[in-house]
Structure formats: C-alpha cells, structure tokens
Length: 417
Image 1 (cartoon, rainbow, N blue to C red):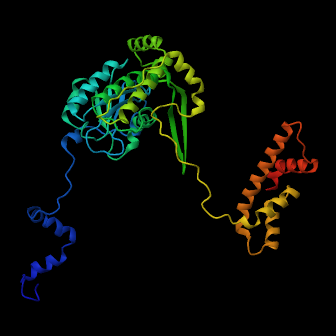
Image 2 (image 1 turned 135 degrees about the vertical axis):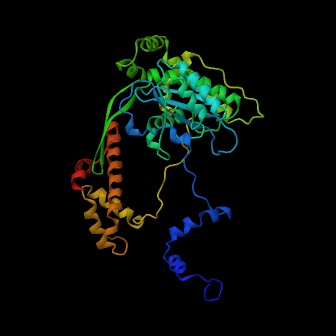
Image 3 (image 1 turned 120 degrees about the vertical axis):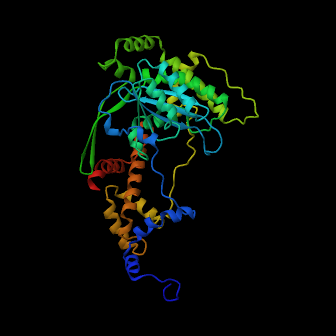
C-alpha cells in the first residue's frame, strides 16, 4: 500500500504496527468485524447454567437413597424428525431404583408435572436430581421446582456421558431391551407405554437383581473393577441403614402383594400391543390380540428358551452366517490331503505341509500352514463324530486300525499341534 501511494504513516506508528502480533490485531479489529457482520466469539455460558453446580461420576461418595440421575430416551425410530414420545428415566444412585414415565412433548412444565407424579410412586423421598445439559432440564422452571421442594439440583459436564453412567446403563439394559427401537408417537402409544411402565417398574425394582460397582483401580493400562453381590433395588433399600422406617414398611408391604409371573405376563401383553401400534399405519384399525390366560402364559414360558428371545420387541436376527470370502487355496490338493489323513491321521499339519511342498511346489507354501491346520481340525472332528455314531449303532462296523488311529489322533491333536 505504501509502494502504490495508498498509505502514509508516521515513523513511530509504522514501527508499532509492524510489531503487532496477529492476536493483537484480532483484538483491535473485534468491534469493526462485529459491525461488519463477521464471525462472533462463542457466547459465554448462561448465568442460569453457571448457578447449577457440576457433579461428576466420582463426586457421589456413597449418597443415601434419594439422589437420582435423570435422562431422556427418544423413541424416534430411524428418523428424528417430527413429534415422537420420549421416556423420562430416573435412577437412584444408592439402590439402583429406577422409574419410567413417557412424555408426549419435551416441555419444562410437563417435566415438573412428571417429577411430581414420579415422587408419589417412590417409597422414599427424592433428595437430589442430577441431569445432563439439555435445555429441558437447564431452565428456571426446573431449578425453581427443585428449590421449592428441597431437591439438590446438579448437572453433569457437557459431552461427558460417563458422569451419568448409572442412568445411561438403565437406558440400554431396561428401556431399549424392553421397548425396543421402534418409533412411537401419539396418544395411543403413550397410553400403552404408561401401562407397560406401571408393570415394568415393579418387576425391575422388586425382582430384577443387578450388579453395582464397588471400586475401580487403574494399574497402568489395566483397570480392575470390584462389584458388590447382585441384589434387587428393593433389597438394597431395605439393607441400607439410612432408610427410614416408613419407607421400609411401605416397600415391604407392596412387595408382599406382587406376583412376578403376573407382572411378566402384563409386560409381554403390553409389548405385543406396542409392536402392533408401531408396525401399523395410523389409518388402519388395530385390533390387538386378546390377552392369554395365566396358565397358557406359564406353559409358553417352559418352551420360550428354545425360540431365543421371547420378547415381542426383540430385533429379528435374519443375517446369515458369513461364509468363505476368498478362494480355497487348497482346493487342488484336497483329495490328496484326505487320503493322507485316512492313512495316517496322526500326522500334524506341519508334516503334511512339508510333504505337499515337495509334491506340489507350485500350489503350496508356508503361507498355507494355518489353512491346513483348520482343515485337519475339521477332518478330525468329523472322523470323531462318525466314530461315535458308529459305536451307537450295534449293527455297524468299522476297521479297528483306523478307529484306533483316529481316536489317538483326536486325543493327541492338542499336543502334536
């Protein structure tokens, strides 16, 4: 600019300008860039967010029953657009007691009503609430609600899922496993989810044992974890000396009236209705199947293990086993390997490979040792199975020398290999 006559500076100002660093120039031009509509600095955290203390995973220090972690589970299916149901999950740190409630919309006022409803179900008082940095939680309505009801309100660090490890584990182990990953929207699905959670909360808290981490130590790259014996949330609540008598009596009285088989039957029926609602278009009429009798449900449990996961919301496993993806390098000498194995089944893969290299130098080399080991392992297993089947049939016969050789090869294969 000086060379073309566009700029003329005094010597002192010119020297100071050349001494400025890039950061100093950016600070000096900040106001000019903001007026010109340039990129602004990231906004500082809000005063509301700063007023809520942060609690990490290591800050709990064995709290008494009543301190909960809260999170949302979205039932959006494969797409997140539009309106869909979300489940509010609360997990107690001390006992693992878990509560669920579906919400049609993400609203702060609806959240406070849901917290009030969940507090009436609990056999003990809610003392603390720890959430993530979602805007549904981080607002004055929820903060004032906690202050008015004597609830300690804290939050985790942004983008640190492990700070809420207790409730995050329940999201996958309970909600996703029982409800699945389908999309649920509308009042009908919310009603069925409420009925499902009414039975699920009792079954999980009174009859579903779980592990709880006692301590974790790191020794270099090795992490050692020690767990308490698995117990139900009810048993942890009753065994905790900090549980008051009223909560203890209320929990024991309700547990004495529950039937776990009927609860499981109700859960399965509600799951089937949810699947019917989710897999049916809104313009079609849904006619859920009538609930089966208790005897029929008990009879189905006796054979459910043969069919895999009996839950209606389980994902079907339609993926076929993966086969061979590369050509067989020993296809040209397979018959020769089988004949050698039939004559001398005690030979190892290394011995057969050396023999193949001499007779078929252009086909086999040292790279085929592992393939040959797998091939011999399969042949030994098939031979041993045939020998067992022949022994089971008294009318069958087999050559004594081959039978003895195969038997000895199967026994010594681990040592010879």
